[in-house]
Length: 177
Image 1 (cartoon, rainbow, N blue to C red):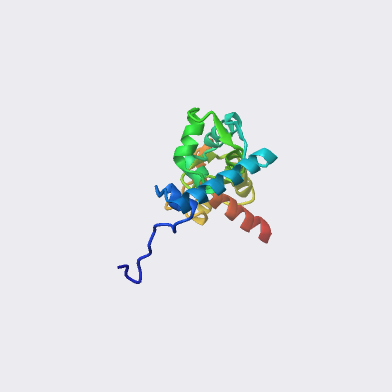
Image 2 (spheres, rainbow, N blue to C red):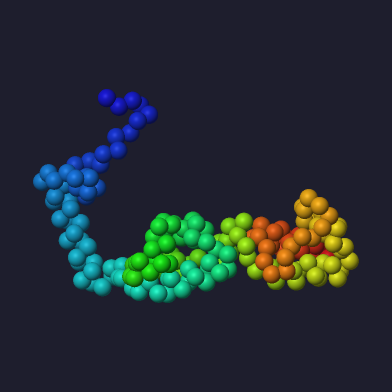
């Protein structure tokens, strides 16, 4: 007997999900046959989710990785599993569905997680403009929320969180002036 909070996780008879759990009763086999017939008709009409080479997806994942967007960030942004992305990236999966490729290609550089190391050139350009506009390094560091009055960023790369912090402050200052 089920308690009021518990839910029976077994799908109902006569459905494809029940067939997939292993039930082979007449009703479940009929539901599976209907599903397969429907799929065949979709494929014959040319509207199915076709298989395509994963080369384009693999290259996009490499570009994202070099921009600081890792597999976990891509997985969260695209709703694909990390293991699927790893198989595509390593070449274990030579073909993918068109819908999977579309999900991967829709992920941009803005999906980088806060701790990811990204290119710092835009942030440093903004910092240089702020310094030229009258801010000193100590004041700017404190305004950006640093613990010490020092700008301790490398010129080449910094975390996405720091890039966002510099950008937000720069926009606030330039919008007010």
